[in-house]
Length: 146
Image (tube, rainbow, N blue to C red; front, side, top):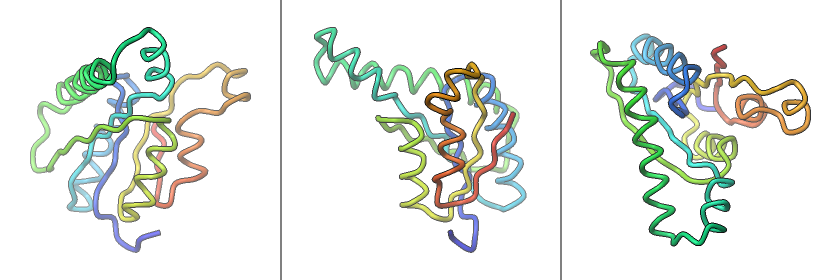
């Protein structure tokens, strides 16, 4: 784990929970004097489904970019009145929890601020939520916003 927070990483998906995490992340970024990075991960399961539908890699990339832009737009709308914080955005493709954990391995100074999603109790018991997996495996500090 890095000794110093160098950025706030907020995984976003356009949901109310990720928007709350982004708003909280901005407050933390101001407190630490760092920037915030909005991180959208196009789920690997979606890639497999789209691929089975016969779409090309280019079509999959376009679908991923459209989904990312929708999530970024929703988050930026909620952050419209924010000033004094650098906001960057990054897109990845794969398992959301694994991608966030990988990011923390590559960037140990990143503090993750993630929204807890409302999985059913049974589904959560079977596979766990993204936030639970990130909390258990991330290489940097993690804050879960409920």
